[in-house]
Image (cartoon, rainbow, N blue to C red):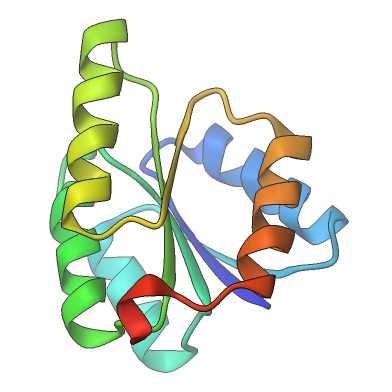
Length: 127
């Protein structure tokens, strides 16, 4: 399974990439929405892991774009905002098309288990 990670924080991006590679997944990383879209066009991923709050293009826009252009891609939205913000943003992310949401910091074991579970089930957006 090929995974695209989008986060504007280089440390978070690097740690998620290492966790995924250690778990046996092929992972590409993007620091911006524009970079993520270019990577998806060049080498389509099966799963997108996207932060919600980013400076150039927010995660909500990315989720919406992926649902329009690549409806079969599984989407995991992550957020590290304040307690109230986390719940609100993650709830909205699910409403607009995220398959699953996780709060930062992301638990590596939980993420790997979630990806294993996603691999077993069809995307709700794919039909």
